[in-house]
Length: 413
Ligand code: AMP
Image (spheres, rainbow, N blue to C red):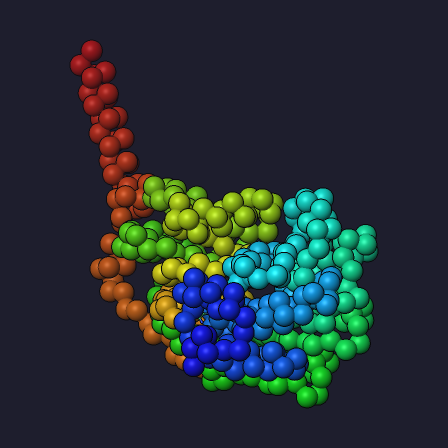
C-alpha cells in the first residue's frame, strides 16, 4: 500500500512525497491505522525504522481535520533528550507544511523567552523534554487541559534517565480521556511494567523485528586491539574511508575530547558533542555535521539519541558501551529508513565481556574483522601520525643527527 492510498489529508500526502516517502515502513504500516482510530498503542520499534512518522502522520491528520472545533494544545510528545526533541520537531515541521497544524519543540539549555513568545502564538503539538516542559507549565505558558494525545517516545531511555515521575505527573495533568502512544526501542521487565501502567488495557501492541532490537540494515563488525592502540586504528579507518561520514562513540566526555586531540595529532579534523557543551554549541556542531562541513563526529551516549543523519556511513564504537542497550541506540544512527549502514566495534581484551552481552541482546554474532600481525604493526607505525612509533623514531633519529652534526662542528672549531 502506498501513502497515496491512505485516508489522510492531501497536504500530508504532498509533504510525504516531497520528503521522498512513498510507502510506509513496517512500523508505519502497523501503527497508523490504530492511531487514526484513537486507540492506545504500545510499540517496540528500534530507532531508524521510521517510528517518528508512524505517530506524526496520524496525529497531524487528526488535528488538521478537527482544528476549527478544537483550538489549543492537543498533543504532547515527551522525549528524553534535547537532540531528540529537535529531531522530532523537524519531522513534525516537515509533515505539517500546508496543513492547519502548528508543531513546536521546546527543550532546556536555550533561552526561554523566545519559546514562551512562540507558545503564546498558539501551537497544536508540543515536542518537549520533561524539565523545560514542567517549568513552562508551572509558569502558565503551557496549558494542557485540551491535550488528547500523549506520546512517550524512547520510553526506555526516559526510564534510564529517571523521568518516570515526570511521566506519571504529566499523565495526572491531562484530561482523563486521552490517547497514549508508548514507543520504546528495547523491552525488558521494567519497561513492560511502565508501559502497562501508562496505556489502556485495550492498547494495540506492535513489535517490529521481534528477534533483534537492531535494524536489519546494519552490518556489525568488530576489530580486536589493545586499549592503547585504539587511536591508531581510528586514524587508519578514517583515512581508509576518505569521504565517509563517521560517528565515533566514546564512554565519557573527557574521552571524547581526548580522541579529538588524538585525531588532531594525525591531522584529522573532527567535532565533538557531549554534555559539557552548551546547547547552542551542540546544535551548531550537529548542523555542521549534517551539512557535511565536518565528517567525523565524536559523541557520548547521552548526546546520541535523536541524531538523524540520513547518509551516515559508519558508526564506530571506540569504547564499547557499559550498557548493551546503548549499543542498539548507537548503531541505530546508521542504516536508517531504507539505507544500509555498518557498525565497527573496537574491542580490547578487557571489553570482551561487554561484547558478549551485546551479542546476546542483538541475537547476532558480531563478525571479527581479522587483522594480521603485519597490518597491526603497520597501523601503529603510520608516519602520518605525529605520535606514532615511527614518527617518534624518525624525530629521534633526526635529532640525533642534528646533535652529531653540531658536536662535529664544535670539535672542528
Ligand atoms: P526514525 O526511526 O523516525 O528516526 O526514522 C528514520 C529514518 O527513516 C529517517 O531518516 C526518516 O526520514 C526515514 N523514513 C521514515 N519513514 C520513511 C518512509 N516511509 N520511507 C522512506 N524513509 C523513511
